Every structure is written in structure tokens, then in C-alpha cells.
Length: 192
Image (cartoon, rainbow, N blue to C red; front, side, top):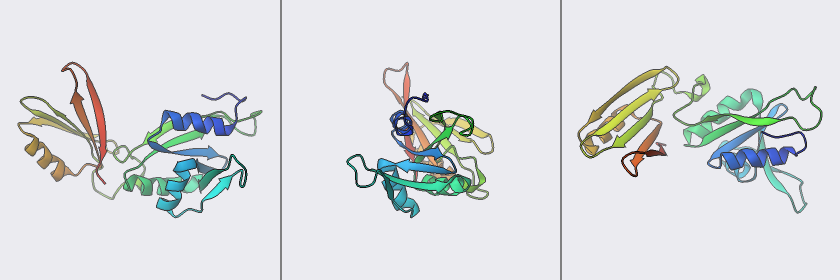
């Protein structure tokens, strides 16, 4: 992703541009830092102290952080509010790297793709659902990434599909939209 000739703030800008709908957890040593609007939003949702980089200068940037060893708990709280988190990790050992440590987004976590025990709710399935409405039927799929459980099928009406969604209570729903009948795009809906 990033060469050692760019600043870590440029690395962050690249990660955020690639994942504009996620809160970017940007690894800096022993912390995940958030910058800009992500820092403001996370500080409010997680009750974090909002600080700033380059305080008092024209290029001042809001900043908030969490210790990397406690990140799963903070991520769980963001997922519970329907947010996505992009984990941007250091891709080399800072002790042996000259210049800026290369970083890349290694995982995007959404409410329906959580797998860490701190991000799951006890014995309840963490369903990621997919729904596709066709002329004569509605296709449904439910997948729990944390257990590998998969179920799918079809029903004859949107009302029946909504009933299945209400019964299984997925954390996230992917809604298929057929533009031409040959290609699909997907819209994501978080259910919290």
C-alpha cells in the first residue's frame, strides 16, 4: 500500500479513501488511532478523550485512540451501533524498518461478520442475511461467520421474507438489486 516515503497521515488518508463508510482503526505502536470525523464520532460513541494532532496549527486534526490489546471491546461497541471498522495494521516491525512503517487495511469488520468472542452476544447466532427479490420468489440466505452455519431457501412473498428476517434477527442484511436481470449489486443494511 504505502511506501516509506509518505507520511503515516497519507497512509491513513489512503485507508480512509478505500473504506469511507468504516471507522478506520489505524495502528500506531501500541494503539489504534482514529483521525478526523472518525475520531469525533468514536469519541462520542465510546466515551474517549478527543485530542488533536498538530494542535493549534492550521492543519490540526481531531484524534482519539484505544490500546491495541483492548480494541476488541471497543470494536464490539461500535458494531453494536451498526458501524463498520477497518483495521489498518503495521505490515513490518517498526524496530527494523527505516522510515515510515508500511500499513494496510487487513480486515473490515461489520455487525454481520464479527467473529471475536468480545464482539458476539453469548449463545445467539450472529446472522449475516442476504435477500434477493425476483418476480415470483424471494431468495434468502443466512450465514453465521462465527460458527460456519448456513441456511438458505426461497419464499413466495416479501411479507414471508420479512417474517423470516424478524424470526432470525440478523445483525446485517445484504439486499440484492437486479438492475438488468443479469448482474446484481448489493446494498447493506445494519439492523441496529
